View 1 (cartoon, one colour):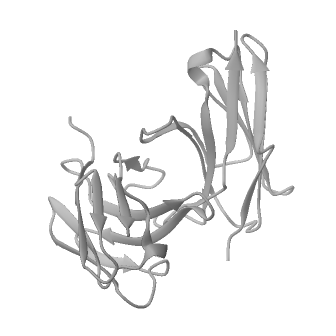
View 2 (spheres, chains in turn red, yellow):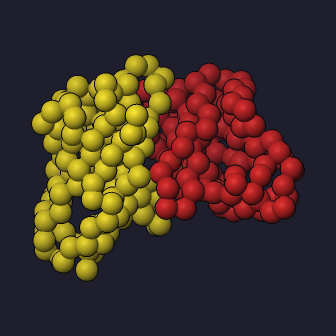
View 3 (cartoon, chains in turn blue, orange):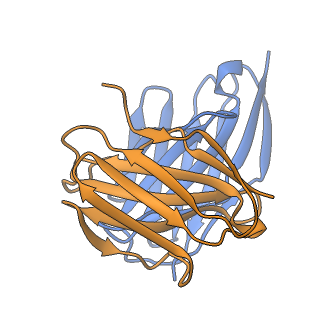
Length: 111
Length: 114
């Protein structure tokens, strides 16, 4: 059964500094990786989806995938206070499966 | 495009009562997913429909939980004899179904069992 773990549990960054979030997974045959953001009392917003090793950039959000190391990361460039939220890593073996989520990283961005 | 619609947004039931949660997927999407979110367990996959057919219910509790998709415009999640441990936010997501397609999540239904 897939296990997804995120670190750190919480992260405080200054506005404009880089924020880096980590996610490890247990099934090396997974090929569907997504980062979501969840603001309090709001739905999930997909930020970046990545399906092969390497880097994928969507605006200020960049995901790095290394399946050999069972690791996917998210980097937030020039974070703003409005980026304060819980960030969730989601993984599945293929697109036709439900996603397995990590418990999230709570990011707080201060001016 | 109104996005995925879930009703009700909040539901309070007494222990032992039945709860039915509704999901209206984005028009044209062929896949519908149900998830449950709690503080302790996080977001957990429950079940998945494709073209209204049940595909994977590996996350559904074996008792008291059932899901249906009678037509392409809505799906329901029914919990019989609700228990306090069923209290959670239940999220529905829909997807166009193609390879690598995104799952778009609704706002969720917060179920509280007293």
